[in-house]
Image (cartoon, rainbow, N blue to C red):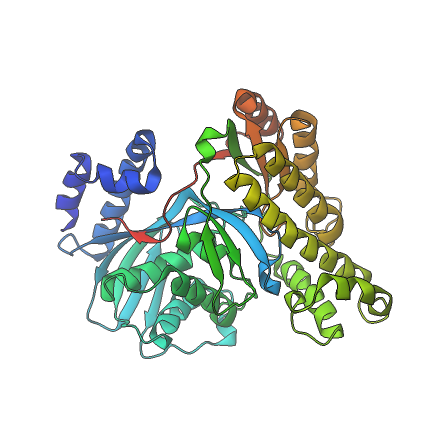
Length: 426
């Protein structure tokens, strides 16, 4: 279907069912329609009104529990959210991928040159190239396409805008050229490969997996090549709580070395015990080795290792609480997770700038408002960005008004858990 036909079909409600399967509510569908129409028009202006169009989507994600565990083969609990990246795409026969993201320059990748280059680390074009290379390495078909993308996953928010973009590209190649045959797990692995090898960021697999798989999902990364993925049966809408993500300001652009240090220090502990990652070592053996470890690694590395082991257990308990419908127990686990991230993992503010502690301030305000009623914790990678809060519905207006009086209007995002991951919508 070409641009004008598709726009008329969306306006006429022909795709309401397809949109609702992704965005959950009728209200959300109506909010999405102008966004989709605008993106189609932008694509057509760039690439032509006569092109046959497909539309793909990949969500941001919220990390519910399991802060900084995935990169050491740990356990996580995450959920896809209603904020997403979408792509208006059309095949081309030129052997070129062109991706124009709203507000950014055009990324152009030639498919006869899919080798990583260190001098291009940090360039978004490298992410496009890395996804194409990863899909090709798996033996799937990779050919050219033109795409216009737009995203409402806020950059630097801890909601994984980069993972949504990577999974979106993987979904495009899966549905455009491989009949949707590439599994969600493989797309997530390709997205991580792109970010690690082509973009130069040593991220774990959590963000990409949660975006690719969708809904509430718990992931055990004991085997990175074959992670155990389980969807969690829990209707959050019936809990009586709202999930809020508060954007405290700042961004993650200059914090790569802070993130790398968390992983590096955990792995330093493992290497001091003759292993590669902490998951290869039993907690009892690690704890007994602390006297010797103090002579081999820094103190913070040991604290971060303690966080890792206890956080894995919290993930197990959080999943059990949700599956049994015990939301009160779940809240206590989230509070424990937040305390551990603050005190042991130490990713609530960057040591580069210790006087700027917006996340700490948001956590303190949340504690004052929600103590004995809700739960709150640092969200995502930390050091800057966002906090997560589970707020009783009857307190939502008060919480939102109070937190936004400090961090600004529109900084408290009330989210919906999305039932699907990376997908073709139209």
